[in-house]
Length: 390
Image (cartoon, rainbow, N blue to C red):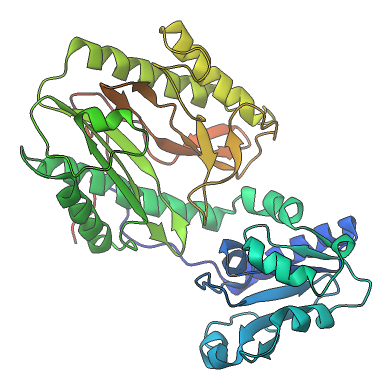
């Protein structure tokens, strides 16, 4: 087996962030927008490198089409924000009895249009509306999403490393399973292993046994593992903010004939989605290909169960789920740099579910896997690369 390089790729640097800002300013100019307001969201990190938790207080940035960059922060957070800044810009501060929204509104011209980060809280948008007319406020998503959806080589390298860590953690989790073990114990083990291999810990973790696997995001009870249970583990970590998200499904003990039939149908659907992902093809065509494969195997149609109850896949990057999506109605053409999950889950209500989730990124020649799909039901990690010794 080939080994995986344990070296961590370089983090996103200032030069790449400046290029992102230049791309955003070009989109702003075309849309006749003079400023973009970013809140404490993943887009703030994408453009400026600042990673800040969301709260009721505005910490963010104003990006000007003319070339300026302002940071906005409560005055008592100034020193901390100063230590996070990697791109030059002016820092605007506000005291607790002052309005940050008035501060932002006064920073742009009286007739200038501002695009607002769509991931900001509605309460914040309402506060901004008190200072600016509605006709001057527009959605920033059409400006931001086309940039964020097409990942650079540096972003892809970070995600590849995060996913390599997670597939090794999956293998280790599989090898330590034992009868009577609770799902919560496995979650803690996976978090420890993500950290041991250099990840951020679990960005999320779903561990399901038995009937709970028929619920796409797991059950509420802390079920104990028993012989003959289907095991579904869906988890990820982050490297420099970039996400992994991989699901493996297998059986603890002997699989029934029905489990094998469903697992093989899931494997074919995942392969059909990958084969359909060609440059220029609409995202929804990939979802249609997976559903077509499932219908040929007797599942569905559409979202009917037994079958696939959700979309085939989602974009991934700084957010685990981000657009565009592999789902009916999303006509976005596939393009180089786009990254997606491929996870056409099969749910058999009240019995079990099977989800195989790997991710691919688009190249000029077509899709390329980040991780190889699960080898088989009985040998789930036979094709997983060996992790280098510490």
